[in-house]
Image (cartoon, rainbow, N blue to C red; front, side):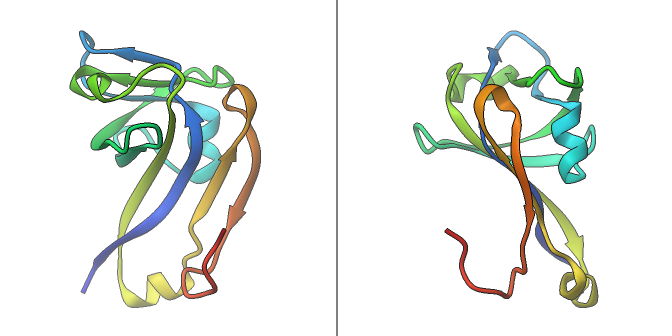
Length: 128
């Protein structure tokens, strides 16, 4: 049996653009994608930490080093520039794959630059 589990996460990035008139998706700096193993066209769940909105969309690859976190199309209605968001990517895994997997998390700082990348044991203690 395959189950959807957390593959990777970009934690507390700031929205840099919201374009409701653009084709739907989220554009993410390619460097951020590479740091956690996300790819263009991957499905992601986004949580807006300002207003609690959650939405699902797919990834567009942004310019490396740009810090881009751009919500496009209908998703742009749920955010404002500057909102902190958590971007979560899930993958289907067997129990054996799950046992060996450690989700990669990019902790984001100023200007959407990576402060650090961590991995954690999903069966380990809660993270704070």
